[in-house]
Structures are given as C-alpha cells and as structure tokens.
Length: 205
Image 1 (cartoon, one colour):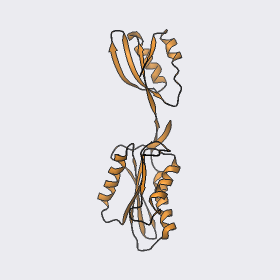
Image 2: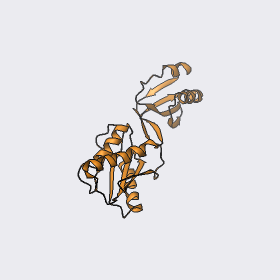
Image 3: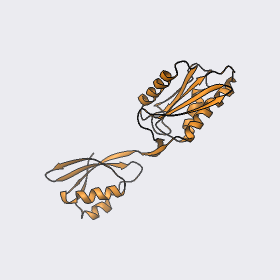
Image 4: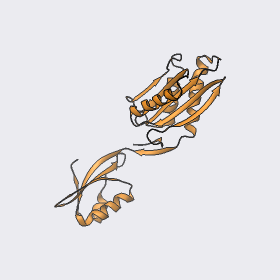
C-alpha cells in the first residue's frame, strides 16, 4: 500500500491560522506514525496557548482507512462541532499518519453549531493546502541468499527498483540480504536470478 503522509520531522509541525467572527482558529498538523506523536503535538499546543478556549483535535495514526489508531475530541465545544468535522477533513484528504490540533480563542461572537463545524473544518483544510507531503510504501521483509560474488549485482538490481537492503549477514555459504519488498508488488525475482546465473535463494522469513 502506498499513501501520502506529512513530510515533517519528529517534533515539528505546520501551523496556520484563520479568523472567523473575531475568533482565532490556529491549526497544527504533524506527522503521526504513532498515537504518541499526536499526543506530543497536543501537549505542545496546550503549552504554547494555555489561555485558549479550546484545543480540539483529530488524528489518523496509520494508513488511510485505519480503524483503530484514530480519534477526535471536541474539548468542550458542543458535541460534533469540532473533532468530527476535523477528522472528516483529514479522512477526505487521503493522508495517513497525520495528527491535527485546532486551538481556538473565542472572539465574543457565538458561531452556532453549524458555524463552528464549518470553521474547524476550514481551519484544517487551509492547513492541508500548504502541508509538505511524501509517499510511504508499506513493505514486507524478504530474505535472500546470494554468493559473495553476486552481492554487488544484487544490490544494484534492488537499487534500480528502489527496494532497500535492510540488513546483511555474512556466512560461509554467502550473503543473506533482508530487503523491504513493496507489499503491493508481486514478488518476482526471476530477472535477478537470471543476472546471478541462478545463484539466488529466497529464504523463509
């Protein structure tokens, strides 16, 4: 499976802001490969803005369509007016591994439930417009055995296909390479076996 994620280093986030009827909505986005990364973002938002009215949030700590490592919170806003609209925007973006907090400073004018939902959704949508992204490829580990003389050729073949070598173990009978094969691509090593004149073995994981 391949999908986009925020291209942000751990501990960093993208911050944007909108004003709606004098209320400030500050949106924070981060890369959240695990729930802990989102929780760190929420803690940072609360620390930076201790006087804010609300810190509403939503996250998808996994691939698009993730069902378990997800969540959203209205943080005291009327039920369904903040966290869920925020989550729906994240879900509709096709992003995975993403966390979001929207910090609100109340401006004195009540927006109503519909107005709140639109404002929180707009804050997230605007933040997503300028969010840097990169592609994540889910990978399955494969273990290959090649002769010492074939290691460089095997690495070159794998590199041409952007298949990373994750580990190399050297034994008396050759080199065992653990590689990250794209999970959405059928395993076909026939071309590599041909290059190595058959000196290739696919080992049990």
